[in-house]
Amino acid sequence: MSHDTEARISLHPHHGRVQVRIDETLVADTTRAMELRERGYPPRRYIPREDVRMDLLAPSETVTHCPFKGDACYWSFDGHRDVAWSYEQPTREVAAIKGAVAFYADS
Image 1 (cartoon, rainbow, N blue to C red):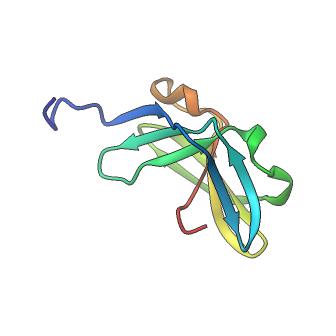
Image 2: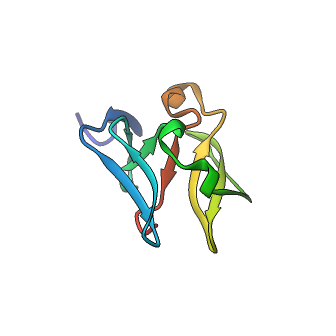
C-alpha cells in the first residue's frame, strides 16, 4: 500500500501488558490496550478506563481538537499537568477508543 492510499489512522489490538507509572505510582495496568497508529505520530496505546486509576487523575481544563479523532479532554496527576487524554465522543472512524485513556510516553 502506498503512503498516499494508506489509511491516516488505524487501530490495532496491543498484545501484551501495558503499565503506566508516574513518580513510582502505578496509574494504569492492562492487557486490553488498543494501539492507535496515526501517520506522522508515534503509536499511542489507549487503555480501557476500567484499567486506569481514574481516582488518581484530576480533570484538566485543556481540550484539543483533531479533525480525524474529535475533541480530547485531559487529566493531570499530582503536579504533572495533562499527562493523559481521552476522546469522549470520537469520530466514527475511531469509535473503538471512546472513553479509553492514553498517556504521554514520558509520564
